[in-house]
Length: 444
Image 1: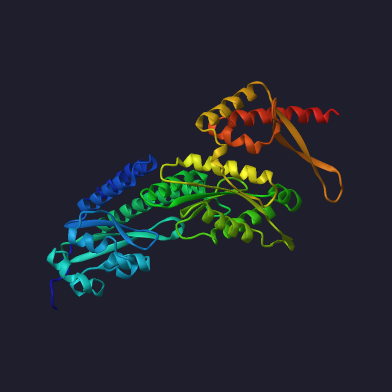
Image 2: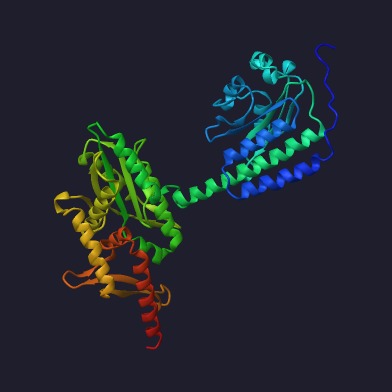
């Protein structure tokens, strides 16, 4: 028989079982307490290296592009370099096989293993003679990476060492699943479940990034504020499922008209904002808006019914010095004017109508006064059953009874209320008055 024989290692101290219980309790507490995952993985890799004789431990994860990332390791730098950043086609050794096969891989003799053929010289020069890897199984039963032990002895793990490896693997999986669950939660917060688009939380970041990229160039940044016309009518007549279909189809049709680098977010229930990353000016933004408007106007078939949807679009542009919130405000102001012009209208924001930050501050102050002076009122829109013709309910609509301008719709003051932090107070006012008036109806 050629080559060194496998070395049999005596069992460690029987108290190791108690030590595993202590390890499990301590690390589970740290995982539950929210300790940083990198720190937890460093501790677990170090525990494994110290608990297995003449061994180095490496924890490697895979990202969404199937590239390997060394998360924690005390393996030689040359080995880490081979692993880190490698794509699926370049994965090798016990850890690569553990990930692709989703099972533990034992290599008692690296020199004779086809898994290490391409990199044997590196491992031999580092004195690494054997290996064992365990897959890391993450959320939903999907593989998320691997733990690999490299041994300086040509041997198998003892039962106690194997028990430690399995315990550490379990704790690593618990850490990874915690991070994945947290990531999924953040995705649900950041992304709209119906359309798959980012919501308004990420809009400022996109605008800030696009504006910064335009610095020192001739590019402008375009913003389109898209508002679906009469979506409430669809919801009331055909149901919210039909309304959801209109929203999802609209989102898809907007995306299909954009170039790589352009972004669309769902800003509100029936509102979208499009960020055009590089445009020559408002003419180009208007051409994109027209393509979007025409595409959205194509028939949508919902449960056997053909619907024709229209949108109003407000258009503005900015340069590197333009504040992101100013662009959003301008887009909103433009779409409000577009809706005043009728369904399917498009309006370019006219900055000559702006009176600056002082005017916005004045509107916020005036809105606070309106709440204090009880200038808002509730209008009731009845809902009529299609089969009976009877009133089956009513929708409460808030209006501002302005002493100088008359009745003002919510499109003109909701944005100001949001910026001024008055939405909670305004919502409470609406709820209290709607309930009070509804009680009065029951006595009629």
